[in-house]
Image (cartoon, rainbow, N blue to C red; front, top):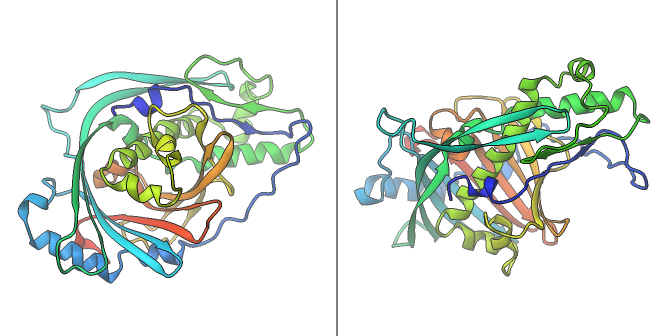
Length: 344
């Protein structure tokens, strides 16, 4: 799967800094100030008991690395709930494995800037236990080895809020100003007459560093969803959110070009004092919409930190909640954590 999710198709992300003719301005949602309770409830007692069984049981089912990530998953449909435990193991870099690289990617934007991102091969070992309701007895265990671009995972998603803050400043400066189009492409794109003004970009805080953090979040996001797609068994869980083949196409790196991701509403925002218990109190909440044929079918919120140490395996995503637009009563929540003995 190495980097194919980003390289196989053109990726364009568009933001409107001014209204388009014939379109009504979108009403911005107010960001919730805290982490949702359904995420803080993970890991539940049933996850904890099963994690304990794994950590004290068959050694072949344990991750080889000391920095492996453990994840509690719960899928609820009304009063019914199913539970899983997932483990992601990205071995630490050493002198022998480091430096194994392939061609990276170049992204062009309508500010006239371009950004290059390296390629670095690595393998994540994934293991999914479940579903289960009680830890007693045997449950299915599925394993996989996933080829990834480690460099994309290391970019992370946690710094995207600065980009949206700059765009908000631009909107507030002149709400009735000229229409502007911001886009990111793997092919050179014409510069926008307004957004290519270097003095304007400096005034609103859209520095090359801020823009690079946003542009880099796109391959990081795609790499994260690539890990989700390639984790054996996790696709079957996601199919329960949207029955049929659509979810496979949505997450398939070689799927239809009519499938896309965009940052949702509200725009990414910071939450202080998150309570997720991973060593840092602040997270970036990132609403994401998954679209098919220009219609939103899944709404998700990712919660991200700096992808250092074990968090590199999931691009810094420490929690995720996702539900289908047509059936919001169905909800999948994931919470990543370090080894069980370090959990709150």
